[in-house]
Image (cartoon, rainbow, N blue to C red; front, side, top):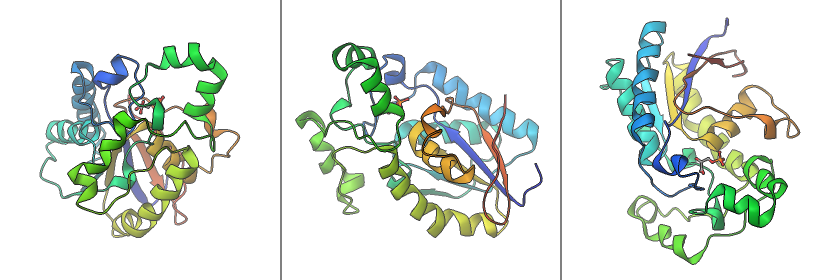
Length: 229
Ligand SMILES: O=C(O)[C@H](O)COP(=O)(O)O
């Protein structure tokens, strides 16, 4: 690695709904014990590697926020400034939120569920009534954020990249090591841009929970991630 700008991306540790194999999206579920342990281990690895973040970015969801706090506490970097933004939220899984992934595959077919989970531009069905009340959640209503009815990866990329370019890039270019604690699909969207992954290849990309991925980005903000641990 020989780039100039140091970026760490970290998918949240396993959550209670990951454990139950439920589609989560914007539902604000906590980490489970394993996920908390993964977060602490991530902090240990960052400290051992000497990759100490100067600034933290998170989504508005507790599984990412708590993962970052546990990791930073372990790395003795809990004191760094933090910026939180909805653009880093997990992809909204629409009407699939709360459903079991295996049951969804039985009902709709493996192929269809794989398309909903991993394709670039196939959206899951829109939000069910159960989750429409997310729109009243203070973290969105207070900022006038309209909660999407569903999202494909392309939709996520179209909200992540503008925020990456308007906010995160300038912090990187000021010489800060930046940690982004977020989600499997919001980070896949960013990784697609950083590593120049094609629409065809992105369905094959998985981001493990709780594993820091290190980038030394070049002047064009491109690079190849290195998994820690
Ligand atoms: O939102 C979810 O269900 C998970 O965080 C990610 O799910 P996926 O791996 O099915 O995209």
